[in-house]
Image (cartoon, rainbow, N blue to C red; front, side, top):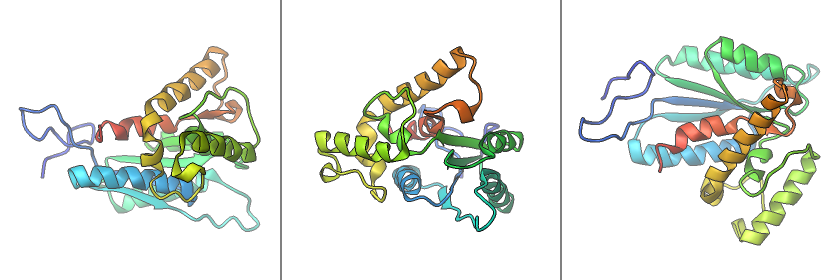
Length: 219
């Protein structure tokens, strides 16, 4: 088995190729179907090609009487990392939703060496950016309406967007590069306006950071 380099990724297979294998990723998400299906779809593709560990785990948070807490999700990711030190990359995927500690969780994750792929308000923003620009906040329910319009127009998944599409990455992957471009442009626009708080970046997402890392291994 090739040794990991200092960046935590495997060395090249041999000196005659530029192809680099991915390291062992742990992707932790708060138990919603869309995110889990999306990253498990990518994981299956990469495993088929490289045969190495990319683990996607969903965590069901017990929020009875406590309110939502993204920091709890980050703590769970840290626990999972401590149980398996072979992970070279740990990512936490979560939405703004009603979480009051959204900014704090992002900072907390960074302080502890975890990466975050957050969305404000929801993961469907990342999917919608595959098909259109979005520069103003909309209601969460409007994301589904807009996605249904695009899926019907392009005849994707029999013309209907659903949260439980098993191969959602494959379905929308032809448009992933434009989604990355649009997502980065959104963040750049906020920063140019001196808006640096993720809570105030609505719409905004950093899912593209994780996706950009992963798709280099499947192109």
